[in-house]
Image 1 (cartoon, protein in one colour):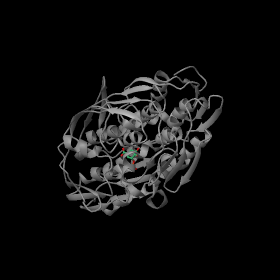
Image 2: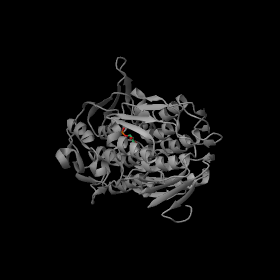
Image 3: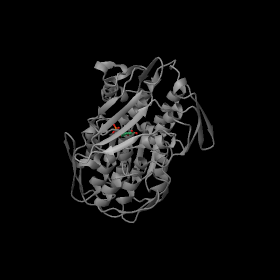
Image 4: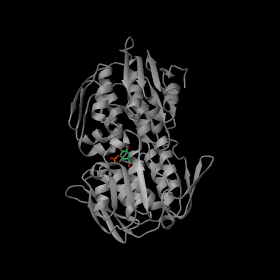
Length: 441
Ligand code: S3P
C-alpha cells in the first residue's frame, strides 16, 4: 500500500489518545498464558505484532475472548502448556518471537518459530545463546543465529547470565524461562532496559530481586523458581513510542498545540522527551499526560546511557534533528542496525529523500538541520518503508513538516504497531492523506 502525504502550511493541533503500549501488551498476554486461571487485560493493543503474540498464546494452550475493551485470557498455566501443533509465525515482531522463545523453554515438547522476511534476517543468537548457557535445547538456522528456530522445552538450571547489550527482549525471555528453573537465575544487563516484565511480575505475585552495581551502573534482576504466576487484571496504558511521532511533529511547528493523554511515562521509555526538552521543545508533563507547544528546536548530542530509553524513537528524533537549527549527533546506537531494518541506513535514506545532509556512523548519525516548516512545498519525493513501521511513520511526519508531496511505499507495515496512525495524522494535522491513491483514511 502507498501513502501520499500532501502538505503546504504544516499545522497540528488537538488531543491524542495513543494506541495501547505494544511492549506491555505482549508481556500481558504471555504472563496471562503462564498464570493458571483467567486474567483480564483491558485496552490490549490491536497492533498486528500483538495479534501474532495472541495467536502464539492460543497455540500454547490458552483461549482468548474479547468483552468490550477487555481481553480475557483463560489458561491452564505453566504446568498445562501445550506443544504447539503448528509453526509459530510471529510476522514482523522481534519482541513476540524473542519472548516466545523464552516461554517455549517451559513447554514439554518442541516449539518451532518463524517470521516475515525482516524477522528472518534479524539476530536470534542473542536470545538463544544465553538460554543455551542455562542448559536450554535450542536450534536455529545459520549456527543457531536466525529463524526458523526450534526449542525443546525443559532442562534449564540456575545461573547468572551477563547480557552484552541492555535489551528488554532478552531479559524478558530469560525472566520467563527462569519461572521454570529450580533455583535462582540472575540476569545482568549493562544498564536498565524497559522493566515491563518485572512490573507485571509484581502483579502476579512472582517475587524477584533487583540491584544496581554502584561501580558500573549495571543492573541485576534475580528470580528464584520454580514459581507460578497468579491470574491478574491490568489496564494497558498508552504507548509513548507511538505518541512520539505526534509529539515531535507538534514540537517543530510554531503555534501547534497537542495534548497526549493516558501515556506510560516510566523513565526507561521517556528518553525522547528528555532529548526534545534539551533541544528546546516546550513540553509540560502531567500524570500520564504531555502537552506540547510548537516552536523551534536546536540540534543536540544524543548518546550514552540514555540510548536504551529512546532506541525506538531515533528515526522520529532524527526528524526533529532535520527540523532543528544546527547539527545533531547520535552515538552509541549500533543496536539500530538490527531492528526491523538497519535503521542507521534507512533513517539516513529517508532524510536524504528530503535533501537533508546526513552522515552515517557505525553507531549513529550526524544530521545537519535547518529545514523550515513548509519550505519544500514545491517538491515531491518517494520513500520505501521496507517492512519498517517506524521508518514509514517518521517519513510521513517529515512529509507533513517539510511540505510538498511525499509518497511512501509499503505503509501497510504501520499496522504492526499503530494501525490508526494515518487516521490520527489526518485528524490532527493539516496534511492531506491518500492511501493507495484513494480518498482520506
Ligand atoms: C522491546 C525492546 C527493545 C525495542 C523493541 C521493543 C521490548 O528491543 O527496540 O521495539 O518490548 O522488549 P531490545 O530489547 O532489542 O532493545
